[in-house]
Image (tube, helix red, strand yellow):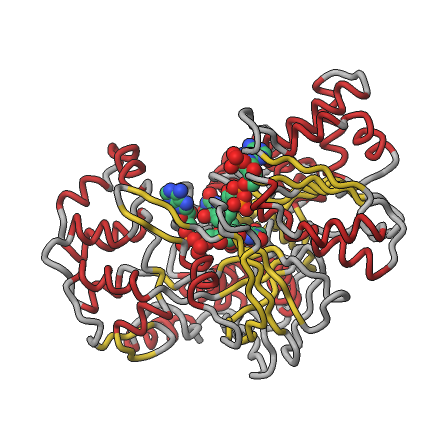
Length: 589
Ligand SMILES: Cc1cc2nc3c(=O)[nH]c(=O)nc-3n(C[C@H](O)[C@H](O)[C@H](O)COP(=O)(O)OP(=O)(O)OC[C@H]3O[C@@H](n4cnc5c(N)ncnc54)[C@H](O)[C@@H]3O)c2cc1C
Ligand SMILES: NC(=O)c1ccc[n+]([C@@H]2O[C@H](COP(=O)([O-])OP(=O)(O)OC[C@H]3O[C@@H](n4cnc5c(N)ncnc54)[C@H](OP(=O)(O)O)[C@@H]3O)[C@@H](O)[C@H]2O)c1
Ligand SMILES: Cc1cc2nc3c(=O)[nH]c(=O)nc-3n(C[C@H](O)[C@H](O)[C@H](O)COP(=O)(O)O)c2cc1C
């Protein structure tokens, strides 16, 4: 009766199964879900008396939470719930008052912030004082352990729901990038805890992930796409290294729309693996067990399966045990948070092994500290109409000096250094419904995309040209130098000539003593930009999230404030309304 993934020995299973057999079907389903989840709920609520309504509330930026919300609703319906899903982008806090059964799936972005489209809801919710004592809930938080504020948004929502009096029916599940297992356990546990008594007899709670035909490519089965062409977009002498990569999608069955991202599954570089093996004092010929894969040579697993670079509290916690390091345990203490942050800054796993496991590690101990190698996302830079059966990317190679050493990004340099024409690159499409061209081709668009942020706008302009959309298209592009870094210059000039691009304003930041950025160009053309907005133009931003996206947002607010001659608050409300009506969309990272 217990689900297969419940964490018990055979003997424990037998005992628990016989206990469960004595209960009603509802009680069985309810209890076995908790057991499967492997964690006790904070407060156990009795199953409701009638077939229950269930709201699955999600907040997403790159679509993971949305697809899990969709799966949750489907599974809940199978179990007799009247389930529906709601995007945080489309709901206000007041709507929660009517919800009696609530499952929340939400990711964290930026530096511990909510996803872009959930920001308004989140702000309103976190400051709300409403009473939710009639609401039963559980939260599944998506995140990435390599970020300091792991799953922060899920944590904030979970604790605020509790503070508002809502009843937590299952402990929050915090998921790393590889979220499937955690999600399934949470799904089973929470649906059982909420199980409607009036539903048809409930089968033992075990969620079977849909089996995917071997020919169907996607996240669980990435497509080995052939690299057709690679080209460095910067001229000789540039400080940047931006790669244009063309991949084949023919016979993959994969489809994308402009605005979507492509996920790439890299392998680790030979020199990175060598340095790690040296630090751990191993050869690479040792055999190890890789979860869901089987027995492998350590060197192969380090290349293909493990994230062997990103340092995090999670990795250091496992290393402290593996190396039995008191110094590291101290660094992980509650009172050493700032010291840990400083240590992690600019360091990788190899540094931590050198520092805290000076005698080396066994192969099993080493492999035990890693998480699965996560895929990286790249905004798609091509329109499927302009390049059928192909997908193009614009990738900035990440290379930097830190603590006196040269370091490089895993995926960007895998694409730049290791992938040659004819090689196969494992990929899947990550749809992004929050970054879409206007449905009406006659609507004007304003695109702000410095550096690699220009990628989706190449797709947008190609797509509108292929469709013959009459709407006006205005691009703000920026990079360091006109001579070396004018990405896709000839294409933009061609688009300007044939009318596919209405306006192009460029900001080359390092061609003069003072910095000039895209937002300076926006401010210089404030009147026209405001007129475009007033005529209904959609406004898009792509690229750096740390500073650029914020500064462009500030420039936009200031343009509206001055042009409309309204207060700062009114201008902020104008921008908020643009976001709400999906006329202001961002793809920032
Ligand atoms: C939706 C989305 C779309 C994206 N689109 C694009 C795109 O179109 N083009 C593109 O190039 N990228 C894009 N990215 C970023 C991309 O996914 C990767 O994050 C990027 O290529 C780096 O990955 P990597 O594996 O090379 O580096 P990683 O191995 O992941 O290393 C990156 C890490 O290195 C460290 N680091 C980097 N620079 C320094 C430094 N100077 N000093 C100290 N430490 C440093 C930081 O810890 C950083 O997190 C996008 C990301 C998202 C989420
Ligand atoms: N996670 C990663 O490791 C990773 C990997 C790739 C890209 N990224 C992000 O994606 C961004 C795009 O990378 P990229 O190399 O193509 O371009 P970029 O570094 O964003 O640079 C593009 C242009 O934007 C300018 N710029 C800098 N600060 C700005 C600001 N506050 N407002 C407006 N413009 C600003 C730059 O000027 P100056 O340089 O002269 O100041 C440059 O002219 C990066 O900044 C980075 O944040 C991250
Ligand atoms: C630019 C960027 C910033 C992120 N910031 C965080 C963070 O601060 N904390 C965290 O736990 N996860 C962070 N993540 C990881 C995401 O939460 C994770 O990828 C999640 O699966 C995304 O789910 P979504 O597609 O529903 O938005 C970040 C991811 C990216 C690409």
